[in-house]
Amino acid sequence: MGITKAAVHYRFRTKAQILQASLDSPVEEMAVLLDELAGMTSRQEKMEAYAVGWVDFLVRNRALGAMPCTIPRSGPPASTPRATGDGDGPCGSCSATRPPRRSAWPM
Image 1 (cartoon, rainbow, N blue to C red):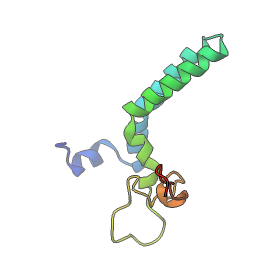
Image 2 (cartoon, one colour):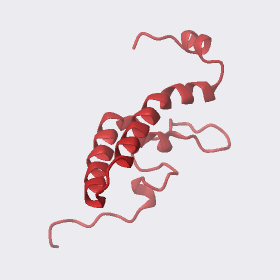
Image 3 (cartoon, rainbow, N blue to C red):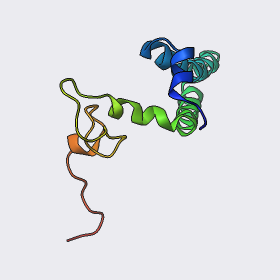
Image 4 (cartoon, rainbow, N blue to C red):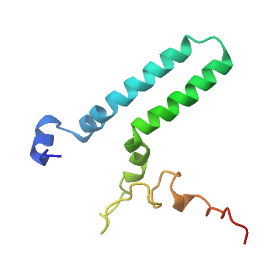
């Protein structure tokens, strides 16, 4: 990416500032979607617009889906980096916290 760690620390003094800056744009996008929905009168129209808007939002902001899975556990540092959605995250949406998937093929 061409950005040094020093440049990041110069621009952002705290981790909270980095998180805030990374979420500003997605929060604004969601606010625009919710404003559009508020102007609609039909429940069906709202549901369809929300579904399409939500999927579009998730596609544009794929990294947000992995964020909860990258939160480090408390305690001593692990010997391996935290997962980015590969099944060992604490968020409840990772494969390690849900039952195994059933095969689509009959056994």
